[in-house]
Length: 356
Image (cartoon, rainbow, N blue to C red):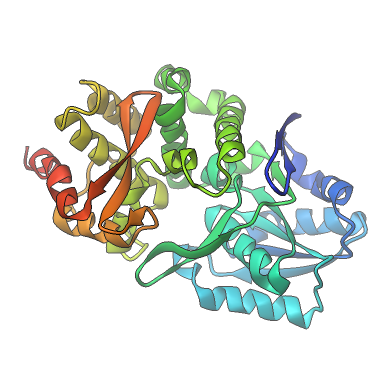
């Protein structure tokens, strides 16, 4: 078993091991005295793993309750969180009880936000079952929901009590959603680790997935420890997300997966920064080649002006400017504030790319 310790305001462990899901109750019991556990999961994941998690919790002394919501980003709304509150309250959950988030990024974000806000905060455990959640969203304590105006605009920082990563769950992940998670894996190579990027260039990810998960989580752990509430360095983790979130909103959270949107966003912003002379020549081509190796997009036919303006409601927006993450080269990233009035002009080179 590989173990990482995250030294945040609410410290916790991340455990990575094949088959750990079936023993999750024992590991959760070691860090919790809760009597009740609410499994929050979606309609795709719960039929696959809900019984195994429930049985393990029961065998370790937990009274188990479940809340299952319709799978998909479209469920990530405040009304869905209210339904979670209702189940928690009806079943008399107290601050000494806990939530178990079983599923992908949407589930972790929603269950985490419910935990952060119900009774002003109860414990929760992340049991991520998608590649995206295992390498990224289950770690770091970002929780939240979407509103009409944009993605993840309502939420809280609330660290989990424990993260249990079982790579075996990836065997049931549809191919498109494995690809979806690869965007976040590639992001880590871009912003922090040229050696990880090179490994992805030469390897078959499925033969080295446990090692890749560990490396991504370790990068995020280190960043989150230094900047838990995104006041500085943690902004680098948003590489590709400014345009990516805007694209997701343009497609009403149905046309693109999160990873596909982030992949397009990474390629588009790097193409723009390389054109502006801020990024080493050839970086865009190298990034695009790796994205395409894993079946991810490197551009998007959506109107570039609309996509750029859609980013103005993003969390990275600040006053009359917007904070964007750029690459000096692979493995070396930085943030830059650009005036909103200049952002479309900065991104406009992508229109030329689509016309070729």
